[in-house]
Length: 108
Image (cartoon, rainbow, N blue to C red; front, side, top):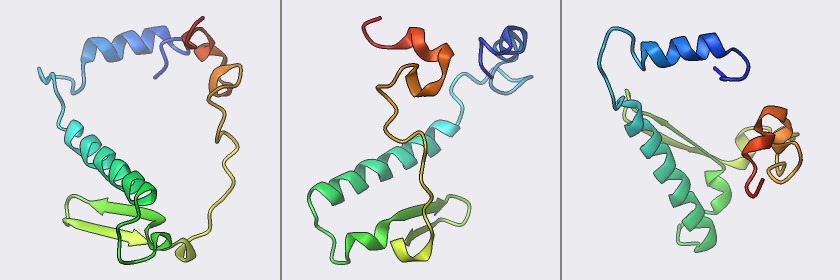
């Protein structure tokens, strides 16, 4: 929920906290985020310093399932990619095409 889009709903979410009715300050979702972040870094290293036995194209999409303890790598040939209209828009104005982010630009 965006603070600018709906200030009252945003204030309600802040007041209610991560899980209404609990005093949880550090939600367990951080472990999932760290798992995903470490996978991203590992993929970057694998592309910058090729060390894998299998071709890098076999690792175009990585999926992991924490419930099943499963990790799957998909080849570029197993799915169709679609153009992303917002790819490489980080330095455009307004930032990412979102006017309410304009005041968050570095140096402004």
